[in-house]
Length: 166
Image 1 (tube, rainbow, N blue to C red):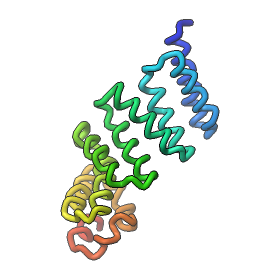
Image 2: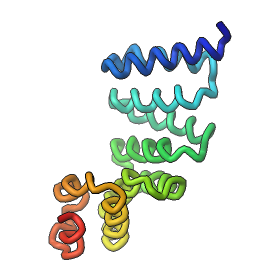
Image 3: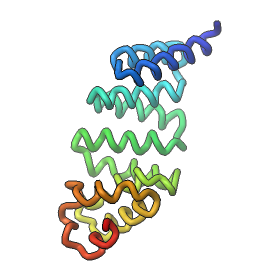
Image 4: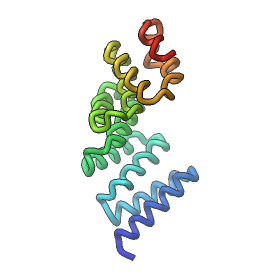
């Protein structure tokens, strides 16, 4: 078996362990894959996911930074880095990552929704409403969440907000 094949085997083991909720073991498997193939984008990405699940947000940010360095056109990495920054109470910094994700994938509802949250957090209400409207047009599943999301608390009485989340 080649090193590349070994890296894929470790990666697949990590995926399966992650599905079982065995995050410590999954992380070890991704680390082994990365020892063998340091530029293994999917292993870096899944490493970030697992670290996020373990609430190791700083480490997850670093994993997503590596994904972005290796594959700057991967919108999920940009969005997930933004999410981890939010968990670190770095909302203002997170916005650029959500915006970049929407530029890379204009139909990425999750990134639009997250951007809307941060615009609302920054009291940029008109931009927040526009981003939220875009997210809801792309995926209606965000309507119930938007109605109760803490980030939209200051928009609860806004007529346009009420219209788009109803």
